[in-house]
Length: 254
Image 1 (cartoon, rainbow, N blue to C red):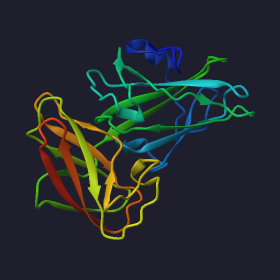
Image 2: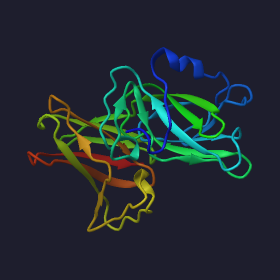
Image 3: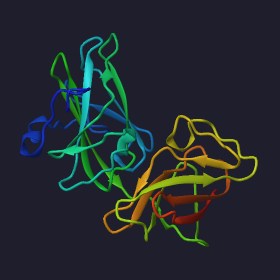
Image 4: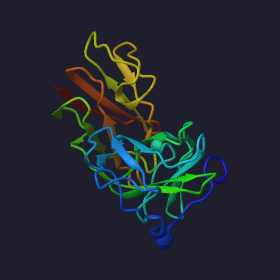
């Protein structure tokens, strides 16, 4: 199952053997540490879900392939489309990342991680060199962004780039939920807006790639990356694919 792009992982107490102390903003990088540049704030490793983490290292062999996985908090549940993947699964407290990293001709590595779908908690990203066995670790924390409820008449105002956490209820247990945004007339949005690579406005609507899912009680929570949205009034719509229930949140980009 785990032979695709990474070779092994650590969970539980064994993971502590791989921990390093020199992380972003703390001293200088050692031979087995990852220096991290966070897209939201390069001075902190506490980010909202959906933030793209960019990690860097110069410790590997030239052109070395590097596998990645994430150690998650005990009991964490993530949907299959979390982390920008379609097959995300927690096995023994670990999530493997499909995309393999690769060092350049000087042994330098740059890798981005999509944190979409990760619930609040403390995580560790591990990079493992397939040739050298060198491992680097970056500890990071997912924290909630501004929260808003999906219901007609509600409105919230945020700056572009804010990770907006929306919630709703009354869906079926485990129901898949499609999400889209109604944009202002004439809004021009780049293809890499909203944390996507294929963002397109069609008849005043932008579809969101990441599917949402209700939990066992029919409650729904979703993190919206508002990066790239110009100032204006928007609405986000959550549509239950089984029940047809639709809920709307009005929001404004300042």
